[in-house]
Image (cartoon, rainbow, N blue to C red; front, side, top):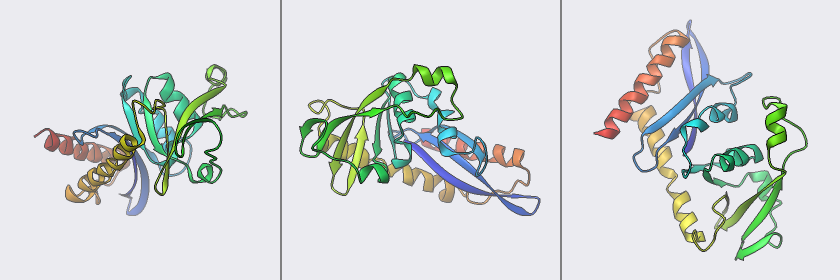
Length: 214
């Protein structure tokens, strides 16, 4: 459900770039919320913008996302909030995945433990870092050319075929993005200042949600 896109703005006659990270509802296609920030610089990373949206999720939600979000910190934060995740495995981690290790659940399906990194990230307080679990348990499942990681660890309740179907449905997010950008015409903004451009983007998202309601 986490989505990301880079947008061009026209400010003072010169193109500038803003980053948008949003969460959409898989069943309705509506945008639950979005966060915007600079494409470069402090506070503009996709992880930083995503963290600002976590409070919009509720216990029991399932979050679908691409490989960018499969970090220890995102996984630990979601587990603490009672949110399950299904992400594609990060490419670097995928190369070292060994299904002979961990708790065997099925063919290329196992549980592994991920340890907390030693170094505290700059954006996290020392207290928050201390309170994080020393390790978390996640599930890795190989599906065709992809490896998924998930906190849905019970293979009897969530078999691999269910995970496969669930992750395939994430393609609807790409269609939602296309509808917002291309169908509604959000690819080109008319406002000339950052403040007005931000308002214009929120109007587009509001219009998109109203259409979805209808």
